Amino acid sequence: MAGMKRFVTYIYAYEEKKKGGNVGFARFDIRGEECRMEIHLRGVYVRRTSCSVCLFRVKDGQIEGFPVGEMWLANGTGDFGGRMKTSHVGESPFCMDDMEGIFLLTEDERIFMSRWKEGEACEAGIENFHLWKPQQIAEEPEVAAAEEMEAAQPQSAETKGGVASVTGEDQQGETPIEETPEPEQMSEQEADLRATEVPMRNIFPEYEWNEIWENLKQNHKCYKPFEDAAAECVQIELKNLRELPKRYWYLGNNSFLLHGFFNYHYLVVGRTGDGRWFLGVPGVYQRQERVMAAIFGFPEFIAVAQEGDDQPCDEPVNRFGCWYRCMEE
Image 1 (tube, rainbow, N blue to C red):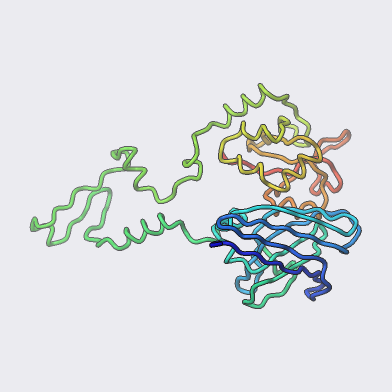
Image 2: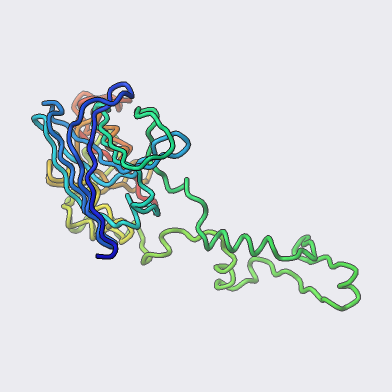
């Protein structure tokens, strides 16, 4: 069958960058544009903890991870199953053929890893691991092509104060150059064509946060539970993510968000005291949990207010609140 590939890779524990014993395996079933993945771990340790699942490639001696899910370990075992597109691993432009192995990172930063493709040498340590970020990718082809075309055009005149200064050949009347119009003289369509960057929200329907917020408050109870006394929020369910702008619907597949929702049965949408809109996942602040939250895109934490608190804590260890990410308007 064309486009079909199956393989199994064995996973090992790593201690202080040294390969330890086998703790399980991962099975991949690739069929066309879909990849099915299973992970089974045994004999790990008894503590209950979460584990980030990343595929990775090695770049400049560093392990570059692409998050594809989260699994839970309990009583020394863990099982995980998931599907993804072979052409976009972890919401990146990289495909399965670019991946070299699988990297599992627990809350207490224990590492389980398997590498099925030989390549550049690397050390299996937490300090050598980082997550792929979109800004690490080169400019979009359309933008780069536009800039190349602009650079390739001959520069026959220099513009000063909006008026073109022509060369001697132009003064003889062979190549007349019109004055460059001022920005306010351009039509909206021309201004759009001259833009070199297109905001992400332009590919989605337009929205207005204040209008969305008013609709949320009509459908859900609004309250102010946090240490930031000016912050207000509403509680929503997973299905209510559809009440947010369409560009944020994909977060319904975020493993960290799903785990928090199934533990506490709600999510939080609100506005901080300084006017930033945010989506929050309820949870308890712990240093290990902070790592997992950051990996899955919820890097900030706001604690629920307690009686007798004069001011917010810098690091509210063991405090209940929510991990959140800001949503730019």
